[in-house]
Amino acid sequence: MLSSRTVVAVASSSSFLPLSHPAASTSSSAAASYPFLNRRLAFSRCHTNRDHSIIPKPQRSRVMEGFKTRAAAASAPQLEDADALIDSVETFIFDCDGVIWKGDKLIDGVPETLDMLRSRGKRLVFVTNNSTKSRKQYGKKFETLGLNVNEEEIFASSFATAAYLKSIDFPKDKKVYVIGEEGILKELDIAGIQYLGGPEDGDKKIELKPGYFLEHDKDVGAVVVGFDRYFNYYKVQYGTLCIRENPGCLFIATNRDAVTHLTDAQEWAGGGSMVGAVLGSTKQEPLVVGKPSTFMMDYLAKEFGITKSQICMVGDRLDTDILFGQNGGCKTLLVLSGVTSLSTLQSPTNSIQPDFYTNKLSDFLSLKAAAV
Picture 1 (cartoon, rainbow, N blue to C red):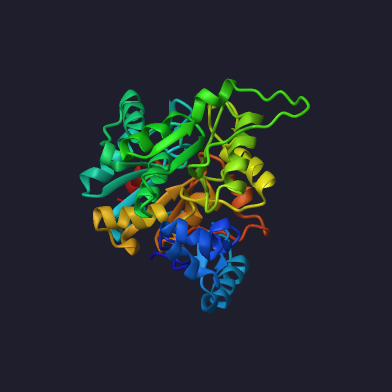
Picture 2 (picture 1 turned 90 degrees about the horizontal axis):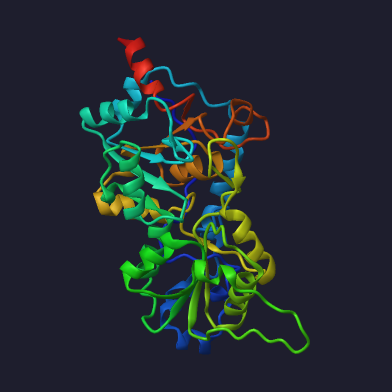
């Protein structure tokens, strides 16, 4: 029998912004100049969830009770009956890094597991916080690894960024300053959104000599920060100027992951380190479009017509993947093939508990065979 766990309910409209964002305190004159901000100002009496979506005041006590319940709950059980879990849902959403692959190396047993789930009529969706590639580029990576995955089944935070901006009717005369890599630029280009920055700013330097003044584009209406191997001081300063000095300029993060799997040999500093630098200089909290924010979950449910209770989120991170599933009202399965260890999961200080955990995705095959 599947266990039931406390689910933290959070507001999930894509129109929500964190209170500390400048848009939440924009003057009436600025709001008049930027009509696309008007519908956010109504939420100024709300409080933010830890994923920076909004929790209306009446829900705060219920949310806190939910956190306390989970914190006090016993550690998640190990998955023993794979068939029961498979039969209980229509759709599986998989994180990629640490679940499907590590770096450029496929995790053992993944192809066979995906084939088995497809043969049982399950819809498969792949969601990643990594913004360095576009959906099309990720499609090529799946193909290179020998996995048959359609572009429409892939949702990267680079795509989520463009989808979010389109959902709020981002003004056509405004631009996006990108602190990030090619994936974000490609998705913005497909969406018809003007941008500047990206990898080409990686070689730019600031000479701190007397009287030096860095000009910035006053038409930048959003600064997007994602993982960036070409991150530098110029980008921090330019993004900071846009957020602090351009009225109503949005601060958007593709994710706040502390670490990422660039190779299978070790963990590397993640996109959260770049986001943290801009947060530190602007004193503004970003709107997060990647996991654990519910924007991607809402988009997927609408795109495919999925009932959220019929989804199982499979991931290797507690504070992004599992929280993403819980925030969306889905079943959750933690795999220990990535970031999270069993000791971390079972630590008394860990308040995020999935419905089940297992060692790796291919356990679906062995557990299924054992149950026969």
